[in-house]
Length: 363
Image (cartoon, rainbow, N blue to C red):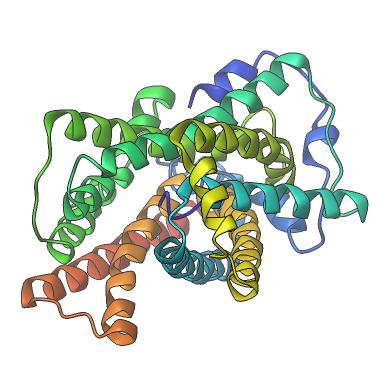
């Protein structure tokens, strides 16, 4: 799910009218996630707290715990991204690859349910429809990203995607009336500028490509916020439960897209020609297993650290991917690209400092 990256706002408002006991929606499903499930909500998007007000619950989540999930998310994200690139060179079937990811996630969550690590909440018909809408948002985000990438250059696509943190702020401000400090707004400048310089290259696009890419940025940001609201809003679902309920629907939708785009027929032809060797199949299974781990960690990190922090991490990942390309594949970059990487990392560091300062003030 990451390379199509490489998205979940109105969901909370759709489900806010349904009442259930807190016990049903805050019961823990896994020892590792226990404290985070109770404590974590969208950390960075809270309105400034008055000194006399008690600090929000999410500020009680320790910095070390957030760093643990962010670090794990970062590593898994890079691993899946690099393995996706390698797989798509050997077999260019992006929709079927995404199907493998969502199918593996569905199997993994089912195994957790069978072994007693996942317990399901009782949802109303309306709440189940919310999850159907969320899975549709997920696959639509991938579809728009794929289509737009064919109409614009890769550097332009990366620059547009780097604006996701800013779009996330705007969504929270417009939809939820949340405010951010001037320092948070300022930190977006080096984050976006840095990625722009780091990926600077041949910028070209059609008007349709620009429109679809911008729409993709909006969808990606909505998906990130919606993911957070499913777990921290009125539903208060666990990361595993959201994945368990969403993944089968997303997998079916990916198969439909694969059939409509002609991937299924091309896959059958490649299979008949013996393209899928035992080694390649093992690689695909390993990639899908990593994707399941990434999805689980990604959702939990979103809940612990917040939607905006996840978006910021995505910008840093773009820069680190370039650095790994230099180290692993001897990719050459210009001085301007190197300066962009440095600026983006500084922006991420400044954003982290702003969040830590706000947490101290609220304590």
